[in-house]
Structure formats: structure tokens, C-alpha cells
Image (tube, rainbow, N blue to C red; front, side, top):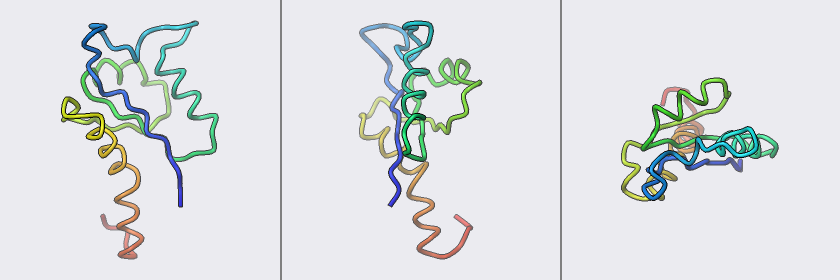
Length: 104
């Protein structure tokens, strides 16, 4: 069984009023620090789940080599973002193996 990492970055940061993922701390954004920490592990895949500020965050991470997906229903709950991340990385491949085809 594979263990991956889902980085949740879909919230709207209502109290802060701007995407905290893009706040700079010691020369890097919080998101860059999070992705770098995830890349230091042996876990794979790593997927970033975006939502409220997806366009702004995507523009800032274009240099990063990371899988991402967008949760269009980010305002529903944190678990909605987790589900989107799981669907992006695990469920389709598991279905493919079960059916023994590459057609999903």
C-alpha cells in the first residue's frame, strides 16, 4: 500500500483576508516551505489541493513540479478537499488495477 501526502491549500483565509499560503517567511512562502518538507519524505504521490485562491496560487507555483487539483466546492468542508485529493491520486489507479485496464 502506498502512502502519499495531500497538502490542503483550498481555504479562503477569511480572518487574514489574503491567501496565507503565499505569505513569505524567511524568504519563502508558507506553501513553498510545505511542499519542500513534503518532498523531503519518501511518501508519494504528493498532491496540492487548491480552492479559494487557486488562480493566485497557481501563478506563484508555476516553477514547482507538483501535482495539483482544484476543489470547486472548497467552502463545503475540509473533508471535501481531502476527498478531492484522494480521488486525484488513489481511487482511479485502484480501480484500474482492479479491472486490469488502463482505460479509466
